[in-house]
Picture (tube, rainbow, N blue to C red):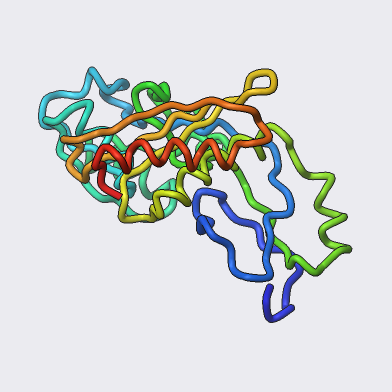
Length: 231
Protein backbone atom coordinates (compact mmCIF):
# COMPACT_ATOMS: atom_id res chain seq x y z
CA UNK A 1 0.00 0.00 0.00
CA UNK A 2 2.63 2.53 1.00
CA UNK A 3 4.69 1.65 -2.09
CA UNK A 4 1.52 2.23 -4.15
CA UNK A 5 1.65 -1.27 -5.63
CA UNK A 6 -1.90 -1.91 -4.33
CA UNK A 7 -4.96 0.16 -3.48
CA UNK A 8 -6.51 -2.01 -0.77
CA UNK A 9 -5.34 -4.52 1.83
CA UNK A 10 -7.94 -6.92 3.22
CA UNK A 11 -7.25 -8.28 6.69
CA UNK A 12 -8.77 -10.43 9.35
CA UNK A 13 -9.44 -7.59 11.77
CA UNK A 14 -8.11 -9.48 14.77
CA UNK A 15 -4.70 -9.66 13.05
CA UNK A 16 -4.56 -5.92 12.40
CA UNK A 17 -2.23 -3.93 14.71
CA UNK A 18 -3.96 -1.69 17.23
CA UNK A 19 -2.19 1.32 15.68
CA UNK A 20 -2.10 1.58 11.88
CA UNK A 21 0.94 2.68 9.91
CA UNK A 22 1.10 6.39 9.10
CA UNK A 23 -0.78 7.15 5.91
CA UNK A 24 -3.12 4.17 6.11
CA UNK A 25 -6.72 4.10 7.35
CA UNK A 26 -9.44 1.63 8.22
CA UNK A 27 -11.80 2.73 5.47
CA UNK A 28 -14.56 0.14 5.75
CA UNK A 29 -15.62 -2.61 8.13
CA UNK A 30 -18.05 -5.08 6.50
CA UNK A 31 -20.68 -6.91 8.53
CA UNK A 32 -19.19 -9.22 11.12
CA UNK A 33 -19.44 -13.00 11.15
CA UNK A 34 -20.18 -14.86 14.42
CA UNK A 35 -17.26 -13.94 16.75
CA UNK A 36 -17.50 -16.91 19.13
CA UNK A 37 -15.06 -19.78 19.59
CA UNK A 38 -15.95 -23.40 18.87
CA UNK A 39 -14.81 -26.75 20.21
CA UNK A 40 -14.40 -29.42 17.54
CA UNK A 41 -14.44 -32.80 19.28
CA UNK A 42 -16.21 -35.57 17.34
CA UNK A 43 -15.90 -37.99 20.23
CA UNK A 44 -16.59 -35.90 23.34
CA UNK A 45 -18.77 -33.11 21.86
CA UNK A 46 -18.71 -30.59 24.77
CA UNK A 47 -16.17 -29.09 27.14
CA UNK A 48 -17.81 -30.71 30.16
CA UNK A 49 -17.76 -34.11 28.48
CA UNK A 50 -14.00 -34.08 27.89
CA UNK A 51 -12.31 -36.58 30.22
CA UNK A 52 -9.94 -35.42 32.92
CA UNK A 53 -6.52 -34.66 31.43
CA UNK A 54 -7.89 -34.45 27.88
CA UNK A 55 -5.57 -33.01 25.25
CA UNK A 56 -7.05 -29.96 23.51
CA UNK A 57 -5.32 -28.10 20.70
CA UNK A 58 -5.22 -24.36 20.03
CA UNK A 59 -2.72 -21.84 18.67
CA UNK A 60 -4.16 -19.02 20.79
CA UNK A 61 -2.82 -17.93 24.18
CA UNK A 62 -6.22 -16.31 24.83
CA UNK A 63 -8.08 -19.58 24.29
CA UNK A 64 -5.48 -21.55 26.20
CA UNK A 65 -5.71 -19.30 29.27
CA UNK A 66 -9.51 -19.39 29.29
CA UNK A 67 -9.62 -23.16 28.77
CA UNK A 68 -7.26 -23.59 31.73
CA UNK A 69 -9.44 -21.29 33.83
CA UNK A 70 -12.51 -23.37 32.98
CA UNK A 71 -10.79 -26.75 33.18
CA UNK A 72 -7.39 -26.66 34.94
CA UNK A 73 -6.97 -30.39 34.33
CA UNK A 74 -6.83 -30.06 30.54
CA UNK A 75 -3.55 -30.50 28.68
CA UNK A 76 -3.29 -27.73 26.11
CA UNK A 77 -1.37 -28.55 22.94
CA UNK A 78 -0.24 -25.86 20.50
CA UNK A 79 -1.44 -26.68 16.97
CA UNK A 80 -0.48 -24.96 13.72
CA UNK A 81 -1.57 -25.21 10.11
CA UNK A 82 -4.71 -24.40 8.18
CA UNK A 83 -8.19 -25.16 9.47
CA UNK A 84 -8.42 -28.60 7.86
CA UNK A 85 -5.05 -29.59 9.33
CA UNK A 86 -6.12 -28.51 12.80
CA UNK A 87 -9.44 -30.32 12.50
CA UNK A 88 -7.66 -33.48 11.43
CA UNK A 89 -5.33 -33.27 14.44
CA UNK A 90 -8.35 -32.84 16.69
CA UNK A 91 -9.82 -36.02 15.30
CA UNK A 92 -6.71 -38.22 15.15
CA UNK A 93 -4.09 -36.96 17.62
CA UNK A 94 -5.99 -34.95 20.25
CA UNK A 95 -9.32 -35.02 22.07
CA UNK A 96 -10.39 -31.85 20.31
CA UNK A 97 -9.37 -28.43 19.03
CA UNK A 98 -10.75 -24.94 19.59
CA UNK A 99 -11.11 -22.69 16.55
CA UNK A 100 -12.85 -19.47 15.57
CA UNK A 101 -16.44 -20.30 14.67
CA UNK A 102 -16.34 -17.56 12.01
CA UNK A 103 -13.62 -19.38 10.09
CA UNK A 104 -15.54 -22.64 10.18
CA UNK A 105 -18.69 -20.92 8.94
CA UNK A 106 -16.90 -19.10 6.11
CA UNK A 107 -15.33 -22.36 4.93
CA UNK A 108 -18.63 -24.24 5.04
CA UNK A 109 -17.39 -26.30 7.98
CA UNK A 110 -19.76 -25.11 10.71
CA UNK A 111 -21.00 -28.67 11.11
CA UNK A 112 -17.58 -29.70 12.40
CA UNK A 113 -18.14 -27.59 15.54
CA UNK A 114 -19.42 -29.82 18.31
CA UNK A 115 -19.85 -27.00 20.83
CA UNK A 116 -19.92 -23.20 20.48
CA UNK A 117 -18.78 -21.28 23.55
CA UNK A 118 -20.97 -18.55 24.96
CA UNK A 119 -18.96 -15.34 25.54
CA UNK A 120 -19.65 -15.74 29.26
CA UNK A 121 -17.53 -18.91 29.12
CA UNK A 122 -14.88 -17.90 26.63
CA UNK A 123 -14.62 -14.26 25.62
CA UNK A 124 -13.70 -13.89 21.92
CA UNK A 125 -10.60 -12.21 20.58
CA UNK A 126 -10.77 -8.49 19.86
CA UNK A 127 -12.50 -8.07 16.46
CA UNK A 128 -12.75 -11.82 15.85
CA UNK A 129 -15.01 -12.51 12.87
CA UNK A 130 -14.60 -9.01 11.43
CA UNK A 131 -12.70 -7.94 8.33
CA UNK A 132 -10.74 -4.75 7.71
CA UNK A 133 -10.44 -2.91 4.39
CA UNK A 134 -7.36 -0.71 4.54
CA UNK A 135 -6.37 1.82 1.84
CA UNK A 136 -4.15 4.90 1.87
CA UNK A 137 -5.60 7.93 3.57
CA UNK A 138 -4.91 10.11 0.51
CA UNK A 139 -6.68 7.81 -1.98
CA UNK A 140 -10.05 9.57 -2.21
CA UNK A 141 -11.36 7.42 -5.08
CA UNK A 142 -10.75 4.16 -3.23
CA UNK A 143 -12.16 5.56 0.00
CA UNK A 144 -15.36 6.44 -1.85
CA UNK A 145 -15.65 2.98 -3.43
CA UNK A 146 -15.16 1.24 -0.09
CA UNK A 147 -17.72 3.36 1.76
CA UNK A 148 -20.62 1.25 0.51
CA UNK A 149 -19.17 -1.82 2.29
CA UNK A 150 -19.28 -0.19 5.72
CA UNK A 151 -21.48 -1.84 8.39
CA UNK A 152 -22.20 0.70 11.10
CA UNK A 153 -22.86 -1.67 14.01
CA UNK A 154 -19.77 -3.75 13.30
CA UNK A 155 -17.68 -0.57 13.18
CA UNK A 156 -18.90 0.47 16.62
CA UNK A 157 -18.22 -2.97 18.09
CA UNK A 158 -14.68 -3.25 16.75
CA UNK A 159 -13.84 0.35 17.65
CA UNK A 160 -14.74 -0.41 21.28
CA UNK A 161 -12.78 -3.67 21.27
CA UNK A 162 -9.74 -2.16 19.54
CA UNK A 163 -9.82 0.78 21.95
CA UNK A 164 -9.43 -1.77 24.75
CA UNK A 165 -6.58 -3.50 22.88
CA UNK A 166 -4.81 -0.22 22.09
CA UNK A 167 -4.88 1.00 25.70
CA UNK A 168 -3.51 -2.30 27.00
CA UNK A 169 -0.89 -2.38 24.23
CA UNK A 170 -1.73 -6.03 23.80
CA UNK A 171 -0.38 -8.37 21.18
CA UNK A 172 -0.01 -12.05 20.45
CA UNK A 173 1.90 -12.64 23.69
CA UNK A 174 -0.86 -11.29 25.95
CA UNK A 175 -3.98 -13.36 26.72
CA UNK A 176 -6.65 -10.71 26.36
CA UNK A 177 -10.15 -10.67 24.93
CA UNK A 178 -12.84 -8.14 24.12
CA UNK A 179 -16.45 -8.50 23.01
CA UNK A 180 -18.80 -5.61 22.35
CA UNK A 181 -22.54 -5.59 21.68
CA UNK A 182 -24.79 -2.76 20.52
CA UNK A 183 -28.34 -2.14 21.64
CA UNK A 184 -30.13 1.02 20.66
CA UNK A 185 -27.68 3.87 20.94
CA UNK A 186 -25.41 2.18 23.48
CA UNK A 187 -22.42 -0.11 23.19
CA UNK A 188 -21.47 -2.54 25.96
CA UNK A 189 -17.95 -3.93 26.05
CA UNK A 190 -16.76 -6.92 28.05
CA UNK A 191 -13.00 -7.22 28.43
CA UNK A 192 -10.65 -9.80 29.86
CA UNK A 193 -6.94 -10.09 30.63
CA UNK A 194 -5.46 -13.32 31.96
CA UNK A 195 -2.23 -14.89 33.08
CA UNK A 196 -0.76 -17.45 30.68
CA UNK A 197 -1.79 -20.39 32.84
CA UNK A 198 -5.33 -19.12 33.41
CA UNK A 199 -4.83 -18.96 37.18
CA UNK A 200 -5.64 -15.23 37.19
CA UNK A 201 -8.41 -13.78 35.06
CA UNK A 202 -9.55 -10.16 35.32
CA UNK A 203 -12.88 -9.30 33.70
CA UNK A 204 -14.66 -6.02 33.34
CA UNK A 205 -17.58 -4.38 31.57
CA UNK A 206 -18.39 -0.84 30.50
CA UNK A 207 -21.20 0.79 28.51
CA UNK A 208 -21.77 4.13 26.86
CA UNK A 209 -22.91 5.94 23.72
CA UNK A 210 -21.95 4.37 20.40
CA UNK A 211 -20.26 7.61 19.36
CA UNK A 212 -17.72 7.07 22.15
CA UNK A 213 -16.94 3.42 21.40
CA UNK A 214 -13.14 3.75 21.29
CA UNK A 215 -13.08 5.83 24.47
CA UNK A 216 -15.22 3.23 26.25
CA UNK A 217 -12.73 0.54 25.29
CA UNK A 218 -9.82 2.60 26.61
CA UNK A 219 -11.71 3.36 29.83
CA UNK A 220 -12.43 -0.31 30.44
CA UNK A 221 -8.76 -1.14 29.89
CA UNK A 222 -7.85 1.20 32.75
CA UNK A 223 -9.67 -1.17 35.09
CA UNK A 224 -7.61 -4.30 34.37
CA UNK A 225 -4.42 -2.20 34.48
CA UNK A 226 -5.41 -0.80 37.83
CA UNK A 227 -6.04 -4.28 39.22
CA UNK A 228 -2.56 -5.45 38.29
CA UNK A 229 -3.58 -7.72 35.43
CA UNK A 230 -0.80 -8.81 33.11
CA UNK A 231 -0.43 -6.43 30.18
